Length: 604
Ligand code: F6R
Image 1 (cartoon, rainbow, N blue to C red):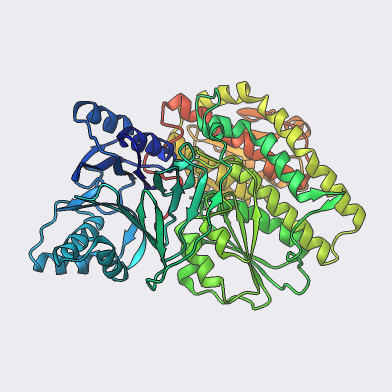
Image 2: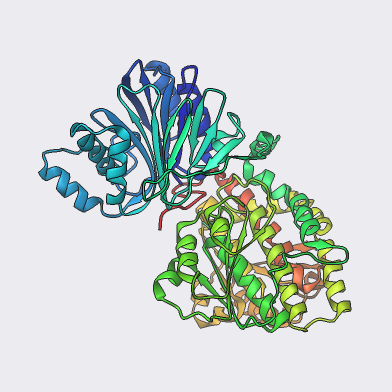
């Protein structure tokens, strides 16, 4: 979603701002802009669409100045137009903003009756005007900030620049993350540390409610009560090369290919000395219920995990979509644990769900990729998924790493609850160690999958079917396909097809069946027969015994390696990702930044 960057530099900052915004491109955006102060004069440039449009504009209308702020905007209030793009300016102040000012209507009405007029449809412009109003009363930028922040409802990260102030940026965070970077006689601000990685590895994360007055000498940080706050400076280890495409055409392709390696990293972390290696607090004795909450792909990982927690550990397990969970006011067990799964660790809905659950359960666990994220910091226990930076908007390696960590957690629950003998646990762990090798084998099927994708690209609608833990995988396969190829795709539980969706079947609808030859296979074959009897075209993804048994009548088959039942959802995710990827390529869509989507969804 939106990205923020700010620089107090020693040279002209416009190129640096654009470069930093490029590193935030992966978050998703539809317009961009920068503002600088040059010898006291505040000026800005904004453009709709990709950053290249802003760069082109800057060639014709350059911006000079050693202080500046920049922004990539993902439209919420008002369409993607130049007038709505950030930075927003009101007189002597410019501001960039992530998040939503929920009371902007009231503020807008108040400012309008005070005689101010608006140039945009955004909620952000109210903040610029509030600041302008306070400055007009003779207040300093810091005094004005202290007065306006308590008036803003909702979640936000803000970064201000002021006319006449060549050595000042003021920033604030509530709900949306913000990091301050320390250079040598230079200072930086970024909505994530990735943007700042080439400029500095010394970072201070602002905490909830913090705001900061930044000059080239350093940052003075205040908490929400206006008291001086000491926030630690940490060194980040973002190896800049890890967010490059490394020879791949797209980040998504690179991230799919990386899965055997990152999965092996996760396994090395969670499986040690012949057993499971989880933090000491992860002891399921006395835990009576588990609640898993997440959004999108991370939610489907929870859905798969529900099958594992119930079947392996006999532990009652609820799963929920974060945006629904929070506002349904679900009763939670005091002896229960709540697990929040999120690649970014910043998803606003998941964060709100965590805050709802925090004082209602015995323990909160974060299963996240970004260990410095808000969700990680606010949970009692953090289990990193070790996927490395994920840039492609469509989550791939984070999904399989989430599944791997959740499976380790389910095995621990089974062990603690006396549901597994030592021998059974060892057998499962030995199976898990096979995963990276099996994934490598699946990756070699890419040319075959590419040929299938050419066929899928001609379809208008595609259905995905699965049974048991393969059902959530059908949901995930459909999500992956629709989000990057824009082909309408739906996932269903195989047995549910006849209760309605079968009406959609005709010869034009490919039906992807995700079905390893397991105990449920025969039931799924019956559902495939129902599809084929209505001239539906079945693409069967199974193993050699499955394809031998049921492949003959199918439209197409893809033969995957045989895999222990527990691991099938992790392994079968890879062909689903590759199918989506190659279908999107065949359709010519923007794979890494599909339309309307954002990587880190920081608004509710
Ligand atoms: C789909 C996708 C999204 C995310 C969802 C949650 O490919 O990536 O559905 O899974 O927005 O994001 P995180 O995991 O960052 O909370």
